[in-house]
Length: 309
Image 1 (cartoon, one colour):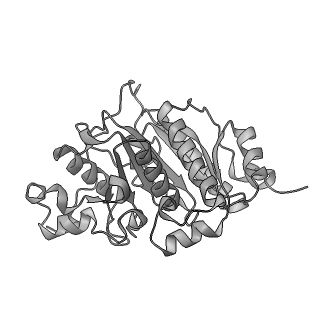
Image 2 (cartoon, one colour):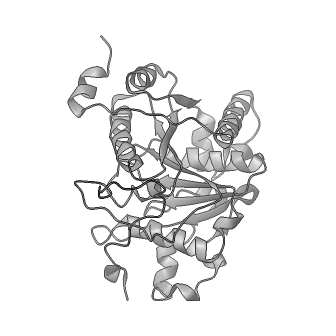
């Protein structure tokens, strides 16, 4: 068996506590449906979305580290074929779930947790789902198989927090799959046109999934931005809230080059401020955020809306 032989669709997803009312998941499109027996039942689950290159992996890894600093057992799942979500936690590019499945000819019973789960900074459990070669399959299947393996090995029972770090810009059926597991989606954006335009598209995808699943918007993380005026204008117009702000600091760039989380860098006043913002965000997310009923704009409307007069 090869990755090209993977099934194209699976039974409908698990988190359907509300009736579907006759509506197909992702009405008007073809969606990957996950096994109904695959559930993340105990942990608080967050999915991190945003424009490609906006700093989702930096945000996810430092948020995982912050949760661990609060004494939580954390599992971070990278959902990008580049499999670089967790390298600041593990100090390396770890093998992906697809890598190890191919090694055993997709016989999952031959795998052990240590074959695909790696301990990172401060005990954070790290998994890279990986993805099929370009043009050959659906990333949603990979996410589903990853969660299935974690459940079979009882690793989801050991986690207090699960963070999905999702491939940028892609909100097709496959890479919307983490939305079927998560309770809250967080969108990372900069204070610029392209990032906010992408956030609006992601907002539409989250709204579509929320019709049939428990996923709700948890808020917006402003990243790599000195100011937040355009983000705040968009949030006010659409019903969103900014839950954190991380400015464009050189220490953040250097942490990636050093393959380290921000909690491992040399102390400085500006670094301490960023660390405290991550800890504050983690504490707020753990306490619970309110459900945001945001309404995305049409593409032409947001094009006219953003910018300076």
